[in-house]
Image (cartoon, rainbow, N blue to C red; front, side):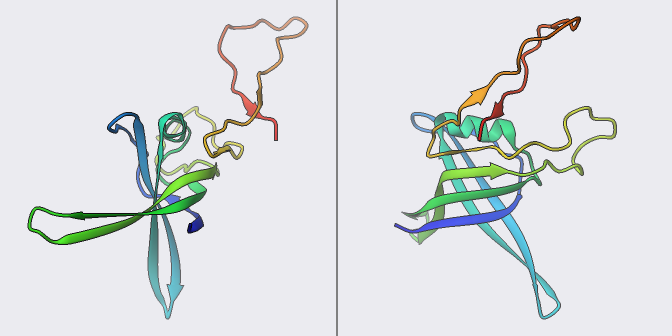
Length: 151
């Protein structure tokens, strides 16, 4: 089994699609390097299913820095013209998101500018704790509070 760990920025906004029996999210990470004065961009494609796909699409956005680990899967097929094709993709086993990109946000957007690293390991969710109830003279406005991993 071949495993890879990659770090790069999301090439596009993650999109949840319905597969044969469950939801699927496929995404590419891009990383640039310079050699002999020229920029070279490398790309790697990951995919995940089910609840993990939903979480990934919910918590990430285009341009965000992501670290991901996955196991290699090579898909082979024959296209309509009879040409054999192959694609190498990696099934996501762990991921961690860095700060969200600010360049795709309109001015005055009130969303958080950065998030604590989040992720999962082989579909298992980390233990989380809800924000404690309001104390003293503070009023609870009834909104759901963000959950923070206890890592």
